[in-house]
Image (cartoon, rainbow, N blue to C red; front, side, top):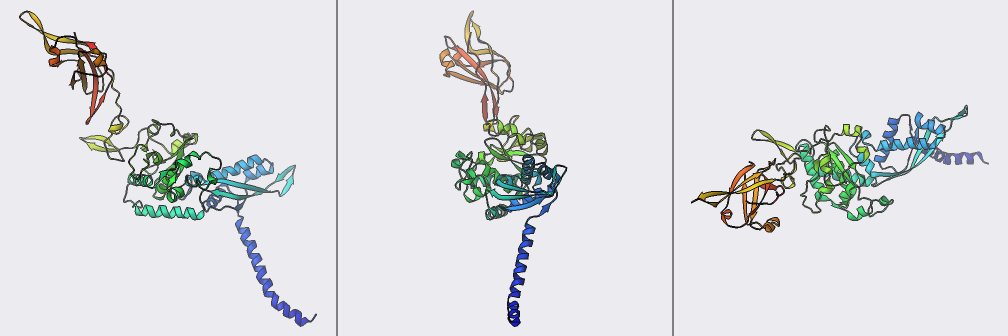
Length: 464
């Protein structure tokens, strides 16, 4: 072959060879960079967390750590997978959350990992494999939202916080939480159809229901189940620096928030405070103690993970629901942090929620008072009563009638109210002068502001 021909051909193809070599070499470097080698549990957790935050569906990592690698060397696959699953669980735990959309938020969004492991068997010594590292590959990391949808959530939350004036110190923590609570209740409605399917094994695979447990669903579709309410509540609170967690029972999800930087926490359930209209008006589950949350239902009995000593120590909840104290006549008087109404009783309740237990009165005696006129006894308009003592009352309500049956059934000819709490007193009525039989009953009452609370009626007694 002509040497000039060869020289000419080489001159033409040499640049192509060089370029191809560069490209192939570049691909090799990129691939190597995509599989990092990590030698500590802490860094491994951070790597997994960051991959999930980026919503990476497929990624690999080579782990150099004694715990998992020793399990692989001993061919104890159950232990190896259990330890690796523990790393995945830690990656979405609040303990390793350093940014707003991690911790409980990420845990609620990530729901499935298809995993593969490739142990590096380097040597076989004394009947045992030496495994310096294990390459783990996540083949199919599944999240409720993808990367673009998560970016949409973050921008919406940021824009809304700015619009509502939640950044900075213009609002107190209480005002911020109240504003967020009310905004969500107006934004979202409960998705009853999705709730009916929430226990289905393929719930997150169904496009119609997939987003109903997420902040994305609350923003985009404006219809979610309880997880969606608590998810977006978490996102808003973290965005403006309010310490917050997502809690749950077997049937429900809600939040706890702190107004003092994490020293104490209170329950807040946006789902149950949403009245189903665009005008939020309910505050039954706003900054409540555990006992107040659990008083009327079983949905707020927390799962065991939220009742451990380590959890309750880190997130202490006081025995009483949150309230604001104001000085009234030199005394600290509790007021509702939501509606600014005065609270009453040992449980700091609203007046319309207040329940006062008033003991039953025992009517010991009821005697007419007579006066003598011309040697004859004549009835007066007075009757003297003797009662048993009842605590926590303002006074007594007295009903009397000539018919015992009518009195028993609530029909009353005459009624008197006695403000005194004395157990022996006299009442007056023209009715007592009339001839015939007369029957009487008594009960205690307590007046709080302009509302009356009554105890049970006493036994009916015939006036002698």
